[in-house]
Amino acid sequence: MRWENLTPDSGHSRADAALFGAEAVVTRTFDTPEFRGITFHEIRARSIVNRVPGASRMPFEWTVNPYRGCTHACVYCFARKTHSYLDLDTGLGFDSQIVVKVNAPELLRRKLSSRGWQGEHIAMGTNVDCYQRAEGRYRLMPGILAALRDHANPFSILTKGTLILRDLPLLRQAAEVTDVGISVSVGFTDETLWRTVEPGTPAPERRLDVVRALAGHGIGCGVLMAPVIPFLSDRPDQLRATVRAVAAAGATSVTPLVLHLRPGAREWFMAWLAHHHPHLVTRYERLYAEGAYAPKWYQRRITRQVHDLAQEYGIGPTRAGMPRRIPTAGPAGPSTAEPTQLTLL
Image (cartoon, rainbow, N blue to C red; front, side, top):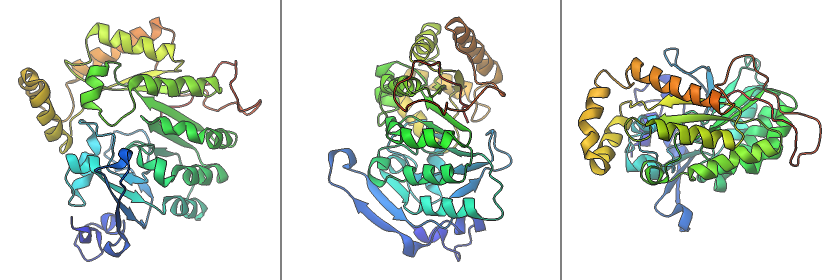
């Protein structure tokens, strides 16, 4: 690994060069079952609030990512390419070489206090999961959430991690002063598929338990049904089973997203596909022949099916203008009140 790629003299862009210097890296391993085989690179980052490129399809402009790499090890993860910027492997290296921005909370608090910051929405969990296993040890999110709460700065979280429930009090406090959006990612409920395609994540049912728990505390939580994996989780009966489970968990919305395969992720996913489902390789080469995204006709078909099922089960996609605030009245314990809707992102 060549950390000097991100030093000011490396010839990389100013955005990359400003991340951190080689002298700021401390590498650690922990001989515990949950972290065995994982290497953590602790850095003191130079910035933490990142502007999303203008060409991005994302519906937000600013993100905070306290980690790089992810032990969820999802074979399709589009963020794999970012590891190549550090000369790290985008396959197993992405799953086991985790960069930890240990000063993320203090950097964020400083940014939110600066004159130039206008209180724009900040999205988290959109690159790698901020509630992956590393968060259980490094505990960066409580400081991040406290900073956002103290500055009444709107934010959203997308996660596959059950650890978000640890921070429930902070989420409620933040929602008393600003808009907070929470969404859990559950693309399918097939446990056999889950074990091979998302091996480091909590099981789909455990993620739906998060939705139930949040709903029980009066916090509406949407589900990003992502990814819908062509030929593996897209049969009508599979889509129905997933939407039914999402509705039963008390989700306020379900929004489907078909698998996309960007460079870095595409190679790793196709290798996985060739090993586990070799008969599908040719079909994938045809479906994704035009680039990273499945054809529009396929995306529209999946979206229509999921939205029809959602309507049948009494939920729907997230829509602009729906209420987003967590109720401020009442105890923090379980509530019988109907959960309020929070935005997906």
